[in-house]
Length: 311
Image 1: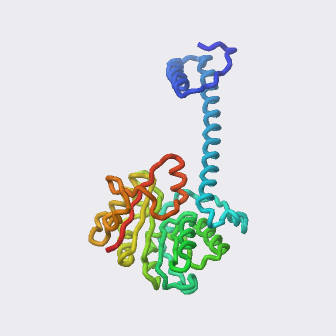
Image 2: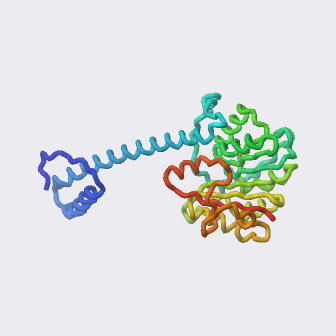
Image 3: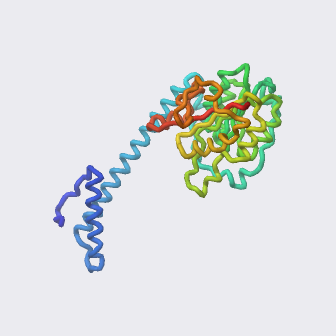
């Protein structure tokens, strides 16, 4: 089919690769011959050339998009001036595991509540809790915005992120925010119930989707955590949830919607919050986007949001 002196072609389209794959299938008919067909040898080289080129392009694309996301995040959180302290303490950019199994024995031990009088200047201020806080930028922005009127606690299972967040908090001299490395599903009730002031806000923003059905039990929002949130949330307090994965957003919604005797969707209380026909908020009510939100919207994804208020 191909002459032995034929140059390996550059494959420009998926269709061309598919055609070659078909030829490969046909070539398998000759697999019992004593000599490997020449065209099969060349085809193998062509396929390798294609995948090496494709992998290189994909890698460059990912790097470019990651750089763009980082730039947008720095722009979104420019008021924090975190970029200026990236290099201090050699703790700016950390490598972390994206997925953690919260059912591991390592994360099944409840975290003891800190001494709130030491953590905050005024431990009786209303409390805002971000569950699965990630890098902590979103919560630090809230802490700076409500510096004299709110305290903020970020719960994150990945310890490296908490260490970096605490370092940033110290460098920024924010005395109304604290990060705790813990499994929120296990520790939320003990931590929040020990706080002297009222719990007025809880957020669960773009949690790990754990796509596989057998891993759904690893999702952070489970019934015990929902019950604990409702028990500790003060009347008038709010729960804000969002995800760029519709199935995850619907799962979280299905935990809160049935609690109609305790919670109402914000649109039912204040019609100025515009929603689509399915009840998803059309706009971010917080005034700032999370890092995941920035990345997802850069890729053209939609963010599914709901905001509830305790009655």
